[in-house]
Structure formats: structure tokens, C-alpha cells
Length: 205
Length: 107
Image (cartoon, rainbow over all chains, first blue to last red; front, side):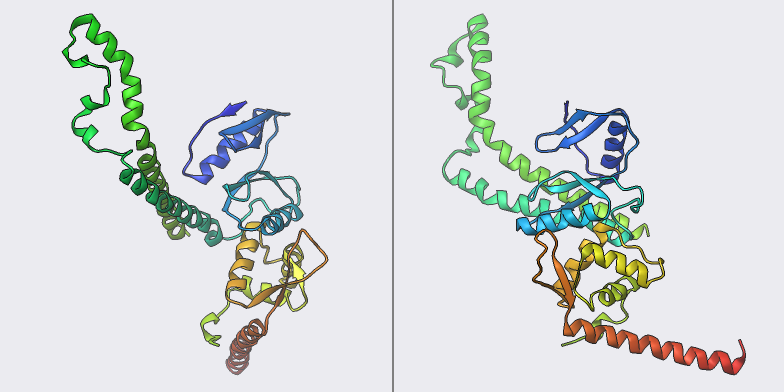
């Protein structure tokens, strides 16, 4: 089963995943949404860390440290950032963080990583602007996005039929690029939110 | 080499540095810290990983070659030992003067 959900609060995400586990849905991967497989319903401890790795050896060292201490790596990859762990050893400590600072710092890493993503998308936006794919003229005269000859001279059913027919194409021509500024904006939003949460959790000692 | 900026060390950092007098990997460090501290300081995996990363960045510890392919092994650096000694002296002084004062005033 696949589910799509968006969290900004790691604690809430952990709670939701624990709830899913108690209903018998075991987290399998997070490459595209949350992928669950059916398992025996069980009360579980699931915790989230945020880390990206340059080298595979670092990633393995990281996962091995958690596994040595009784936490199995459930999902997440070298570059994905969000890493999911499940407690498998009863003797292990109940959390993957033993102090407030290190727990809060995952938000700081998340904020930093989102900001980098936002910044690295920016040159793409500039490129698209200079290659003429982004043309603000269409925002002022959206009519120019419609290519059907004589569309605007038609009237009645004939007009509406052609207009409605072409609208999806026009939107695609004029608005496909908005995907990039939108993702920049959402990365900035995530970065802002995560940073705010970082500051809040540092104060909440 | 400015070692004063690390003083005073947190209890956790002090024990981690102490656990690396002999080369060890992360999990062994966690166990050593627990033993050394009389089971009072327990460091969780995520916290330990961040602490190692931070200490490597400040060159108080360094990674060394080992046969273990999956686990990185670390050892304290000379700078790390200096920092540890400095903090040891600071605490010794506090213990010494506290002892003296307590015995004088019979507290």
C-alpha cells in the first residue's frame, strides 16, 4: 500500500508511522510516498533522523552504528536525508537521541538542506528565462497561449468547444515552467519551517 | 592551537574523549562511556554520530584504518589529549579547593 503525506514535524511523522505499524502496516520504503507492506499489528518505536551522505562508507558506518545499538534502518538512502529507524532490541534506549540539542539539530540539517535545494534550483530558473521558455508576456496577454487560428473571432458553442479543448495545452505551454519557482518556494517554505522548529526546540529545554 | 575554547567540556564530551584513548568504533564508544560513567551517561546512536562528527571537525579525534569495513574506527588526537588534560586540571583544582574548604569548615 502506498500513501502520500507531507510532514514538517518529525515527531508527528514518527507518531503516524507508529500508528500505521500498530494497524499492521510496516514501512518499506519512502522513495515515492510511503510504501507499506502488511505485517502483524505491533506496537513499535519508530524514530527519524535527518542526514545526507557523500560517501557510501559513511552511510554504512552510520547505519551500522544504529544497528549495533538496537535500531534497524527502515527506509532512507544516502542522499534522501530523512532516515527512518525502528527499535528492534528491547534493551536499547527508547530514543535515537539522548539529549535535546542533538535531537533539535536534525531540524537544522533539514533546514540547511532545503535551503541548498532552493538555491540550486535558482540557476535553472534563470536559464529558462533566457531561453525564452519563461515569458512573462503570457501573464499579461494569456490569449497568446492559444494557437487555434481565429479562435477569438468565434462565438457560441463553436468558441467554447475550441476554447475548452485547447485550455489544457495552453496551460501546459504557459505554465509548465511554474513547477520550478513553485518548488523553489516550497523548499524555502520547508527550510523556514524547519529552522523555526529548530529554534523552538532549542528554547524548549 | 587554542585549546581554551573547549573548556569546560560537557560531561558527554569528556567521557567520549576518554573512551578514545584506545581506538574504538562508535558502538564500543557508547558502551565504554556507559561503563566509565557508572551507567549514568548513556549516549544514543544519533547523538553519538553527531558528537563524533563534531569532534572530528574540531580535530580532537580522528579516524584510523581498521579491518572492520562497515565501522569507522576513531582515536583521540594530541590536541584532544591536551583538551582532556586541561579539563582534568580544571576539575582537579575545583575538587581540591572544595575538599579544603569543606574540611576547614567541617561541612
